[in-house]
Length: 147
Image (cartoon, rainbow, N blue to C red; front, side, top):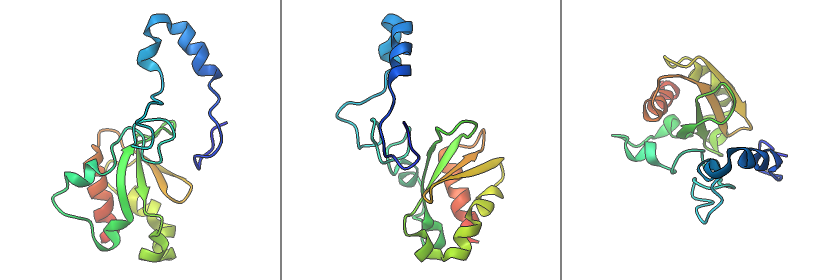
């Protein structure tokens, strides 16, 4: 059973059936549960899927400050029909207030290219924004929040 907060166990029966069906090519599709777990690349990672933490921030010409610092990073969403996931600071309520946090999804939804959004808990905001790169979406969402 997979839960939205990273608790519980993953039912691997479907993966085993897929592995047998793929035969020799199965290794290319197997989940990475190596020693990289916890670095954003393995199973059990607390970080965004498909990303090394801080990659988008490292390429940014400016460091996010003030309300912009509420959105920490951007990665690939694993939620069906969504393309990106924004990682929201755990202390976001204290940083910008609950009134802004209640409207955060609407604010990000106004970014050009964002078609839909959905929350997963209080720290992951999934968005559908086909064609937008991670860094561009991250900067645009931070700028929208900073206005």
